Image (cartoon, rainbow, N blue to C red; front, top):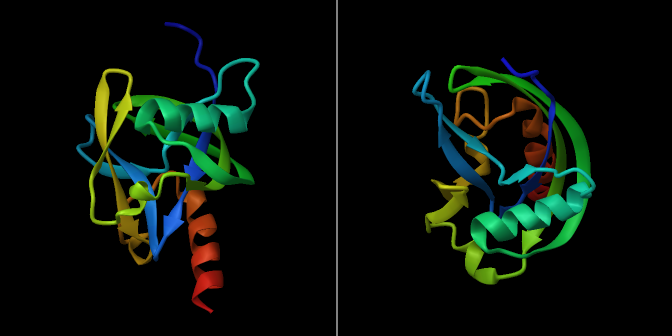
Length: 151
């Protein structure tokens, strides 16, 4: 068995009209549906912001603007029956193309040969008993901006 490594990733938090943009996944081992901000791995020698922009371009053919660093988060998890460990560079950002802001549309996110749905979910559904947004350490960043915008 190969040595397990911590995987550095960059994820983008995009909000619009009380919704947040996420990709939908399914854990094949547990059958659990989960949601995650789009993004992906940071390559050696690549900055996290460049990785974020590259991943959005590769997976959604989307360009980003107003990219703002939020935090570095740690995620230790099990998915598809395998242990994982990520260090997440989390960014708040916006789409350049306003066509991505249709909150009723289902978008296709291409991750290698795999296809996933990317959708807008209402922010108020992100709570412990609500939709499973992973990792849970991202929740305060969604709710902080929602609370700020609601006042």
